Image (cartoon, rainbow, N blue to C red; front, side):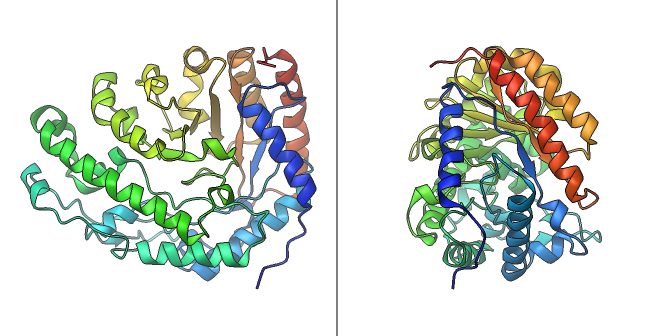
Length: 378
């Protein structure tokens, strides 16, 4: 039974066309502003309450969507977030999930199982029936079957190949391995990428097999045009140099992008490998990052992504409305007229209805100014 939500299909198609034009650098009257109310609808519930139960997670997503539709007058396209945490692949290799005593702290892995890179050659390849992956597939079917078609789906926060390597390998060994054990590192990255591709295909199949049902194939909550839904999360690239990124990240990211075309890259920041982002076989179309850890690099990222890419900086440090508005203006002043940005404003439960709508209107004024300042392809 489909959960009823007050969604105007024609209006959603109108908004999607705005995003399509925007991502292709075709002229629009304003840039999309994304207000993320997932935390703002949590009320008395905790992150653990949501992540440990598919039923609870569906309830939380429906509440988030309903409040967003009610309070955000434009730009908002419903996209649900389906996840148990970032550690799915680690559990498929036998890692245990670790929860801290804080129920609002997301889970991680209890221990890195690989203490010696020679262990790589004895690893058994896991399948989609291993670890917590079956529950992810069950939740994908639950969401796909119970939400209207105008609600887009995401993947499950899989992480990219390097991020998953980090979860399996002892921390010191992880960084020395690039130089001391490059063959073993490549062997494990090849295995991880193969597993991840199988997972992504299984998730799409669980949702009915239509890639158009997805706004992103991983955790990004922003709706993306169909040809840009692929994604790799690569926070590790904040701590390595361009030569290591070129050898141990790019080839495996490329394999994730290949079935669906160009897509997104996540790295909170900083971005020492930024010059390589466009050197993928399918150049990175959008960069999901943290404003706090990226803002100093906006001028450099402007040159990297000019006329092609989109920066998606998240306000993820409990910024006030004033700080978000100042940050968005900083984006515009450093990126226009050559490079586009979508601010992702992450709000918690302290925000009132009036404050949420007020923030959107204030951000929208800057987005209109940003649009007027751009050099558009058409």
